[in-house]
Length: 459
Image 1 (tube, helix red, strand yellow):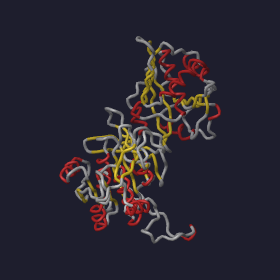
Image 2 (cartoon, rainbow, N blue to C red):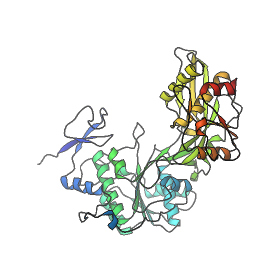
Image 3 (tube, rainbow, N blue to C red):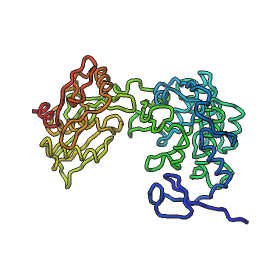
Image 4 (cartoon, rainbow, N blue to C red):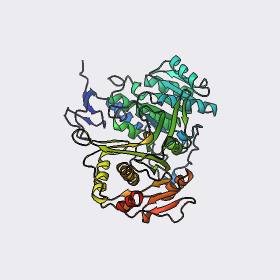
């Protein structure tokens, strides 16, 4: 009996090596190599074909781009405005979309809602569940707003059967929940291992490109928060959507981390209810709804999430350290960036934090990643130290340099327009960031450096 050939795959990046090593030579991660049966050469070849968007089973020939005929297909809208916005305007026929997120965050719920709305619009769907029985899916569908009774359901985990039933039904949209439960008997190993996930995703991608069926794949996440399976899984698909949520909150943020047919880092905001996920048309109002304007340590920034301006409240608390070394705790903000801003405040504005515990929170579960929030974070920290509130109708937009200077940021017109729409009347920004056509109803207060701004606000 011939011995089964094995190889070692990295759980993080999918790199294959002939022998075990403590560190992956590709992504440099430690203790991520696992031994699994190697795919036969024929299967590897099919997987490589599946990873090519223009492949058609070996009959493709090279052509000049000017000889390629056809026009861009019209997108299919789902009626969920936030979902369509993140996708770039709707579902592209023949695309492959990977939806990831923590367990229970709403991945299956939103895909069932999408399938229901597509059926109502006359688009046929096939919902493949590898984790739940048809009865379980029906019970969830009965709780959702709107009828999902027209959605066709298939409880199956074998890839060949899924592809066969999909070819017979010819749906416009195929939804697979989840890719980690799907397997092919051509490969040894349990469902969910690196080889199975990569091969099944590649063949589903080839099916989508050849038939024009849009395919949605649900992906589990690892302990580190990344989508489970190799990184090659994210390279195979056209779009990667990731659900985010702050613990204990009903808000859900759907973020596009990759999109071949739209913008990257676009977000859609939803609210989880008993009837499913409800799109939030005005996220700024949601995140500022519980703001207490008279409290110290609070400042508002107009940040950009993709192409969408969003007003977010930053809260800071500086208190005398009672035990040992002062703490530095941040939620929704980079701790290293916080340490840098504290050093700038101490050196350039004369505010000492050496004996103070510092706590920083970005309200609503949003993660503030761009440097345009530096000014708001610094003002919130100074407000907490002086225990004096900033003006309730003020918004702070700008990056802080190590010299304490306020630097300009991009897309200022859109940021200011969103602030004016939400009722803010004063915007603190760099003199070099003043737009040529500022929106009406908002005054621009120039801040050359951090010290002059702190003196103007707190005397």
